[in-house]
Image (cartoon, rainbow, N blue to C red; front, side):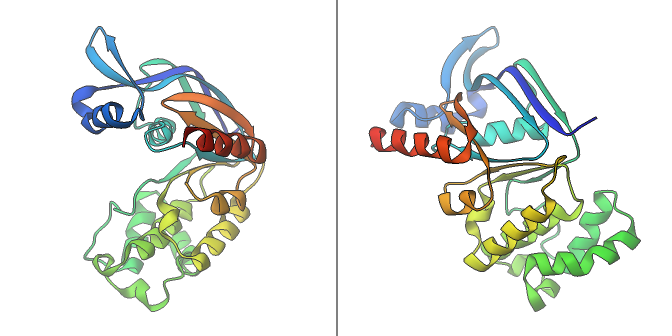
Length: 250
């Protein structure tokens, strides 16, 4: 089956006891989704009636202010959240980079964690060894690759996490803000690596507040506001609309 993402009238409702920060944001600044009442009680409608179809070959920027629903959408695509209503169909091998807090051992070195990560992803040991030089180049960590992860800065963890995300050569790569922690050299390397992963059967969805980063990577954009889909289309057009809207709001 070809790589694709299709959302049909999708909504995600989060119980308020699991979304206290969203309640606070709603009260103070009007960000986040809307509070609704369902048969299960009060919920935050983190995503509301989203219709999207994304085919292979797209590199998509995910735009929106804090609380717009970007993280919820990425987690839904990754299978973390199941639709409250509607449907979500995702076809293809998925890799995610949602946090620099890696589910690996802080006490092991980067090199050792590469081995563990590869095994957990089902990659044969021989292939891990073959890919190791490329992964080391992607991290750009030099001699620090043999330092325990507990000694890494946030920027170094971002480098390492990105290398782990692309290790399995996924069909769909989902990235949430983490690349913002990288420096200019790393961002250039990340753009180059993402370009090498592009193809008719690949999809990238990346959330970031950096227009410079997104413009160097993405050809399409999704704009979310308070859990609703405002626009989906060519990057330059949607980014322009989003920036104009932000200026009006400010």
